[in-house]
Length: 66
Image (cartoon, rainbow, N blue to C red):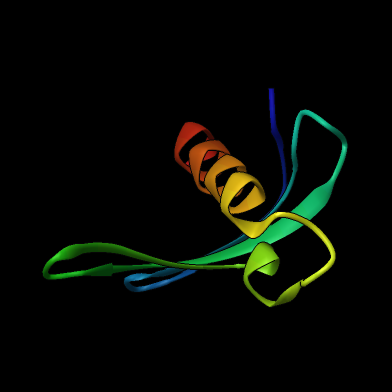
């Protein structure tokens, strides 16, 4: 299970720092919009690992913890 390390909420913007099951520490900025959620994750700007898989894990963990 993922662990929430920090969370900051400002209106429709949520920032969360979390530790995934594989012990990686990641960050996510989530925005609630009229059309649903928009996400920016720490995996989006890191070319050193497969982004789609890690990004999906971060978003899944966010929804489990939020």
